[in-house]
Image (tube, rainbow, N blue to C red; front, side, top):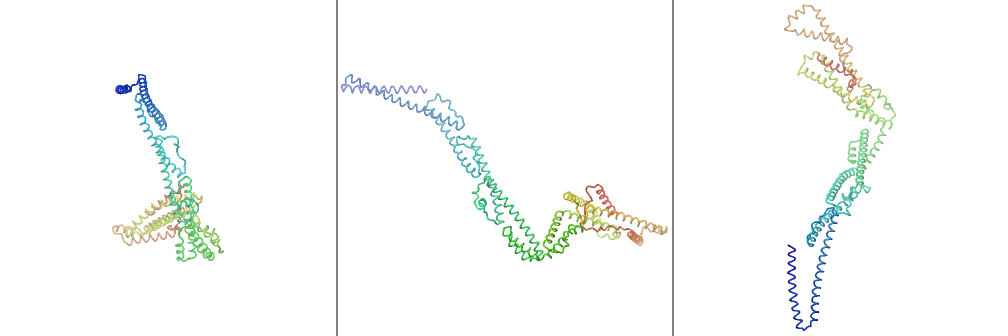
Length: 551
């Protein structure tokens, strides 16, 4: 159809041109005839007209050919550029199917395609430039090298996405490091404020005096920041320990010097915290008190000896061990003597604090032991049956059951701690110079022996009563049988009196009365955890205790 329209247009143009040529030639012929040109002249003019028309067509053909060549050149350039874009974008761009299309159509289609892919390339390069700008700032802040180099290529969409994720990761890392920096800076500022020190090094000035934006969270700077923080923390900790130690020493000296409390409060109020000035003031005050101490050394030694006796008593130190500390009996009052006493006090104070659980368990068991003996003594008193006011017997029974329950627990817990102590120190835990286990074993052994003597005394009393009744004769027994419904009061009293007298006699014959153990209240131990015989002894003891109470 297009060829038909093109041919028809050409035929119309040819007809029009022929008509124009014919009309123009007729007019030229008329002019030439009027002018009287000869045939030769007219022939020449006709040739001139022919050449002119031919020249005009030749120029037109040449111009149109140039236009065609220009279109072909543009198409070729577009194809070349498309090939470059395809390589740069790492993407295939189709240019097939245009062979039968007019050149102008091909040029237009290729031009549109080139413009489209140019925009894609420019968009990627623009995004790349922005990302590289961000990367440069991040690398400068973090002190790292660029992740990737896209200087000679256009990144793909996937590469740009990965690059954006990388940038986001570095941004998050920078924010995290800056958060760590701000936390460390806050802690450092607090420590510096407590110590009241002035930054000297450049890095210290950067952290403490500059804005946060001036800090670059590089690997080196973060390591230096951590080291600075740790150093200042250690300095603060050491200073606190030194100040605390100085204050404790100063308090002890003030107490021994009987320093006025008003002076103490004023001094401590004026020198708070842990600054260098406070440290210096404490040292000066301690030096002043040390000088006063040297002037009153005898009084100090006497006071610390009293303190040492208190710790000896708390720790139940035996007489032999006390005598081993020979400076205690020295009369040469010197600073060295005082120092030896101070070391001895510190030794037993530390010993007590390290084993305070054992001492508390010892005291707790002693209370239970004393209560157990008290209840046993009450059980042996017949008069308590006639004075059971307010449910006293019920209360005693509850106490007895509670002791039966708690005493084994306390002894077990005590033995556990003693075992740990002996394993750690490779020696026995001593009370008044004797192992705790030996002391407790002797207590239970003596308690068992007293129980046996008590049983013998009761048996002797019963046998004695039976002998007395048998001597009274059958008349007394028959009179008692007659008066069974009403028991004479004097008979019961008489039996009670006789039993009491017999018990008194038995007590006089018994060299071991009811146990009243004369051992300090803090002397206790488990009866051994590694010995089956000891455990059996304990069980027997508790059984005896219960049986005795029931009896």
